[in-house]
Length: 313
Image (tube, rainbow, N blue to C red; front, side):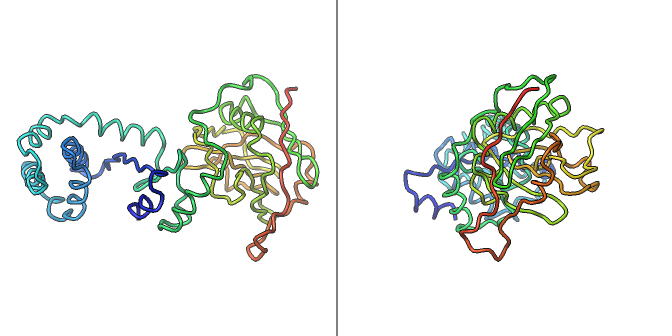
């Protein structure tokens, strides 16, 4: 699948591999080092392919026999086996493999494999196939450019802020909880000021539950601005009424740009999502919002966010 994408896109696409050794697999780190040792001699993918093709040969070997088996693979590839063995015994590439794992943990990866396209995590809920990956590549190219780092500080965590969500149905005014979720409110305000939410469609209106928005591609597949924020779950904030604004999680412990507003109390969501505010004006507008249904024509958009205006009180 990846080979086909590389052939299709030519110089337009570059595939970069990072290790994610699984903690429960006692040979994952060593075999990752073996791939790097082979890569230092110009055949990373040759070793990579052998390791996966012959997984059953080495997976249950005692530790004392694993290196000898890996050296045999290196010999088949025509590598300098003495250098290869020395690299494994000295753990020459251990730090490189560990750095990849540290990066994966920092990004809160959900598992393996995980793909990033132009800095954005591929949404595995659409399934993994060449066609789906191709679609996401095109989507990423058309989306606003991802940010390379978390946003700068644009709010005073001790200040009071309101966000006026101007929609095609009217205005919804949200009191933001900058003291309870300072990092996530900051990124929401930053994106609003950057125009990220301008002309976003309300992706879904779940009857009597919530409305969802925050994806500039209007597909629901891109809630990743290129960075992720750690969740901030304040124990005294609850989804105990209509109009509570929460952020959709991009991974188990992080958030992105998509948000939802409850249409009724949703106690089952307590403790599972970051709450950034509450509607203080415009509940009638909130309940009037519409989104295209599953049987709607492709051109249907429903209601949209025209822009979000941030004011400090």
